[in-house]
Image 1 (tube, rainbow, N blue to C red):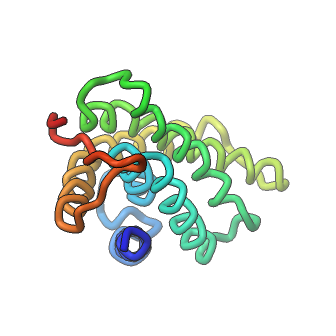
Image 2 (image 1 turned 90 degrees about the vertical axis):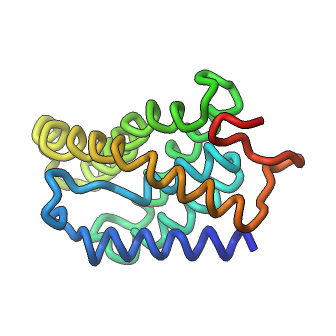
Length: 176
């Protein structure tokens, strides 16, 4: 059941990102990368194991429409999945606050890895222009969208009765 929910939520976010938001940002000041938010929030709420599955699904979906070399999107999701494991360290007590603090970093790392892969493949990358014109605005928009996706994931967890690996109910909204 978790796999079906992960796949369906990834497909919905992918469709929203490619159709509604599109490459131009859909009229938004910055184009958010909602798949990065989704993968990271799944990991914060349900643990890195679920983030691995969500990252793989999101990466394959992104690969379908990307002109980048094969595997670029999958590789870029790896640090997002790894950073979602910071929840186990309990750096910040409240998982929503942790997700909001880490969201810009995960977005920047995802975009940086993508740009690095493109540069390695021989593509011309304007590093400063990419940082100022793409990465920073996307990280900011992802920061503001993170609470919305966090609440959606928490609602899905409650509706479908998911548990964290090793038993236990996910900690969310300040509850144990």
